[in-house]
Image (cartoon, rainbow, N blue to C red; front, side):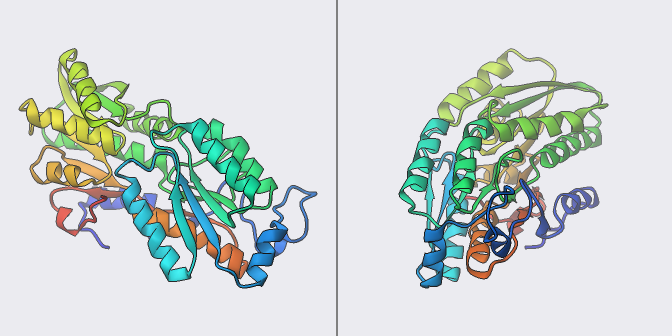
Length: 345
């Protein structure tokens, strides 16, 4: 889908993702033919039971382990995954623990590996450190494994499908600063919220946000942890803002903190007074963009993340195609191009 960006936004979007740019990730590109040569040198070797299933033409089983399937963001990921499954003839399933419990996610993955019940897996982890050993376990067991949505660059993942998190955070901050400047705002505080400040993805995105704010006349406050339960998140935003003064901008680093912060802006009568920058495009976020509460939000194309995660694993298993990553990009959504955007959920 093409979007009608402002010139500044278009340049940033193209820098983050020129279409679907393929990039090597994790421990690099791996091919099925190379894998068959053995693993003494640390290269990947496909498990015998998987190769046998491929040779016999059986339906492949690929599962996507998402750190919290209860999140609204999981819906378009599931839809993209199912689209790939139907198109490629693959048995697909989105799994994972409700609430983002890393220990439960690890246990679920370990069971699948031990039972030899999967031919390929993609993981989106709540904690990179917690998932690193089980990624290595799958890799060493000969199960093709990649990451999606949240990256694990120091692990034995064979590739990554998702957004450049740090780059998108930097672009969000730069656009927020530019929007404030356009409105003639020359000083003040910018408060940042995240549903999980301890998560690796949040740290990466906030690190980029800090870079984007560097050198600006605005003071950065946060990130403030909101959690993902809507009413609790709203209460945290409300209590945080009660204790702040001279706030000129707010940023949400994800779907849930964005809607919580935007709800507070709307209900407190600050629409048009505080510049709001968000992430993702849930139905509620789209409404806030439409009525001007949210000045812009950034979509990371979750449907494409689900689709490409399945396709990459399928192409490796069935066609021996090199495993690479896919940058699904960052799309700036404003009121101007909202009608052309895909709502996530």
